[in-house]
Image (cartoon, rainbow, N blue to C red):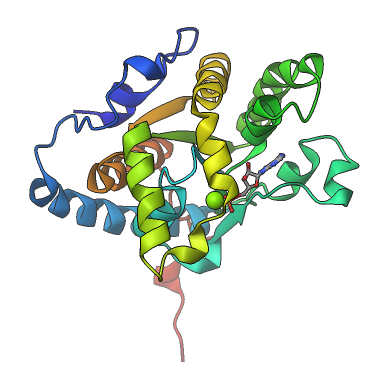
Length: 269
Ligand code: AMP
Ligand code: MG
């Protein structure tokens, strides 16, 4: 089964995140069954990344979004564990600085776009400007609602310039979030991940889901589709993200460049 097809929000259709099951594991029964595939995917990703780097012509931009505790950091830690840091760049987007706020919302994003040969990973992204900004009224509605089209145009520009954009929305249930936040409170090694504001944010769950639904529906395009990853089960989340990345890179089919010399005719003395 091609997970890319299974989990993509078909452009022009509603994402319907409410109707998707966050515990779903399409194509796999359990963790043990998935382990070998995940391992294979991580190796394959490393190989494809190496070719992309050698080719020096195109880039891949991975966008990770999801509510607090959805598993954005965990996905990066697990799925990207086989990547060569030399051509991989992770950017985590926090609340914008004064300088960033003085520019338009895509300014800081553009600066973080991966160069040719690189895989760039966005832990949060320009989508925060239609998510948290909308939920907290940080900009008036006419401002944030104009951004869907601006985002689509921006991502089209990237695609036209050989940056393949792959977007993942990690879908967890409200109950799963509760358990994960509780673990952050109870486990001293996880305390650092907890912010008291996480509780206030959790109260806005419904508003966030509405904002996600809109963003995923309006910004899943043929050139930069959204994938909804059922993420209650971490093993499936890792498997699905790795598999979709492999499928995306295989479709790109990066090649080692042909030498500009004839290796058979050269002798190293
Ligand atoms: P974390 O990912 O847990 O480190 O938290 C980062 C915080 O930065 C989250 O609360 C985001 O909502 C916030 N953030 C990211 N981008 C923006 C933005 N454009 N405007 C306001 N807050 C943002
Ligand atoms: Mg947080």
